[in-house]
Amino acid sequence: MRDTRAELLMQAETLVRASGYAGFSYADLAAAVGIRKASIHHHFPTKTDLALALVAAYAERYDAALAAIEAGHPEAPARIEAYGRLYLGGVEQGLGCLCAVLAIEGEALPEQLRADIARFFERHIAWLEGVLREGLVRGALRPGIDPKAQARLVVATLEGALLMERLLGGPEAFAGTLGALVASLVPAQASAAT
Image (cartoon, rainbow, N blue to C red; front, side):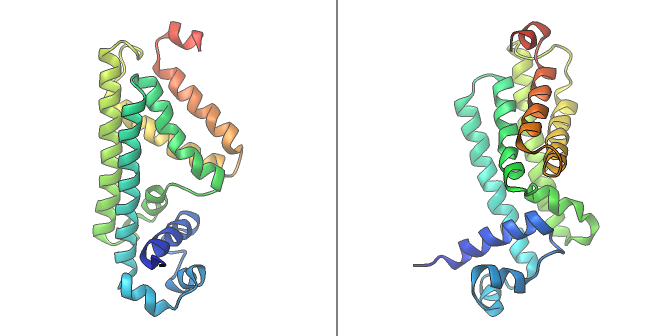
């Protein structure tokens, strides 16, 4: 049996990540899924409803990915690297991060959608801040790092690299940026060994 709602979310995410919130319509989505626009309205009465569901599903996937990173990587540098690899799929597919693509539209977005996007980034920054704090305590990171500022820098660097390398250097260049970011966080002797 076809799960139309899930298919709508999957196709809408691709459309938004490629063209932005203002850059796609229910007509585009109906064509991608092969249904009538009225069927979309059954699942998502408004475009805002659809976008809120997209952000919620995206956040849920990322929350699961962050938990998997914590479970699979005991040290902060490996966690930061694994976090960065989450962005690599976007580079490979030529798609931006859903929440960053939406954030670009800023004030043009409905207030609730802006709030949900902000919460997405706040959760990631808080998670990274915790990873960095733990890494400092364990001696896995360069002393003197400000976890709060560095967490924001990690997100900004990865989002910027995702945007730039989709057009310029592709996955290899993104991997180079990620490697440089991780190397900048570790003590000099550990960085020289890698």
